[in-house]
Image (tube, rainbow, N blue to C red; front, side, top):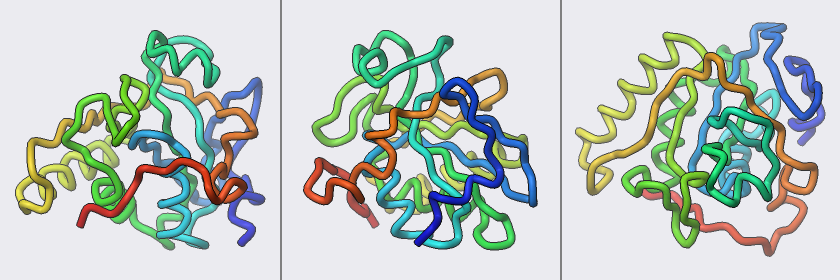
Amino acid sequence: MGIISSYKSREIKDDQITSEEKGGSELATFGAGCFWGTEKFFRKQFEAKLVSTMVGYMGGSSKASYHQVCTGTTNHAEVLQVSYEPDQVKYSDLVHFFFRMHDPTTLNKQGNDQGSQYRSVIFTHTPEQQKIAEQVRDEVQASGKIKGKIVTQIQPADGLQFYKGEPEHQQYLKNNPGGYCNHKLYY
């Protein structure tokens, strides 16, 4: 599909990604359990509407690797960072889908995966994203489509670094079709 090959809004330095916001693209960052399934589901749902996807780590205070994050001591979450064109897909559509494709009512757990690195979290990049994420969360909670209280953290990305995941984790389930995935659509 060529989605992953066009990182026109990214600059990669020392395993960190920062947005240059070129060409009108924006960033969205979601933690919904194991990042392999999160990436697979977003890529399948939005296909060519995304500029790029990249899995990595966010929320901790220092540089992270997969093995460090898996210890549960770094406070990072496994996340998917998406670059998208707002005229192709709305941020609210991304957030609605985020709530559909994982269980936002389980604290630090998705399926068999347990630990704070698997928490349900949205890192917002603008005040408008914060407002939209909170509104969508409240809509989903009120709709009754999700049983139980939503525990998803919604927090500004300000001051937090996104650390790019190792190459073997990028598009893992595309490259390993029989790989582990506990994600499903809940409604």
